[in-house]
Image (tube, rainbow, N blue to C red; front, side, top):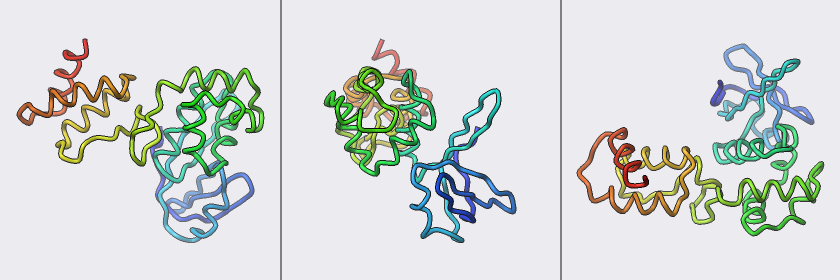
Amino acid sequence: MYEYLTGFVSIVAPQYIVIDVQGVGYKLLVANPYLYQEDKEKKVQVYVYQAVREDNISLFGFKDQNEKNLFMQLINVSGIGPKSALAILANPDHQGLVDAIANNNVSYLTKFPGIGKKTASQIVLDLRDKLSKESSGSLFATNQLAVDVKINQELKDALEALAALGYKERDIKKVQKSLIKEEKMPTDEYLRQALRLLN
């Protein structure tokens, strides 16, 4: 599985871009290819998701980790495929999308192509509890947990691992308050202790 590609933007087309990585061109389907127009012939890092189907393998590209995280959340919703998720992300107001989901604003979601009331309601149902409105500069608690800068890297990694496992942010914050008082320990030990506290 690819995480990101670093190379030069060689082609910008209406539905995709091509990144040249040491002489190999990777075609990436992206929400808005023209955001990369100013990067043409420049070296960039693009986050990537690989979608594999029986008859097709596609690469989807994202400007940053937050955009990729949002895409990953959307494609986990029943009725939302990679291309539908990309169409939703073409709207540059990603925070507006997050707020709409958090506030059960179904009418906002039905404005996107191919999203009816039923699918919009499913998006809200599946993603509302996973949103972190408080996480500064981060769209979802499941991948980018906002943590106190005073926390050491090992504890930060453990807290983010809890988020990835699906624990809610309020529960993780309670654990954080307990663990921050402990002496520094390896990430796996922080994680073990956190799981004990949560269970």
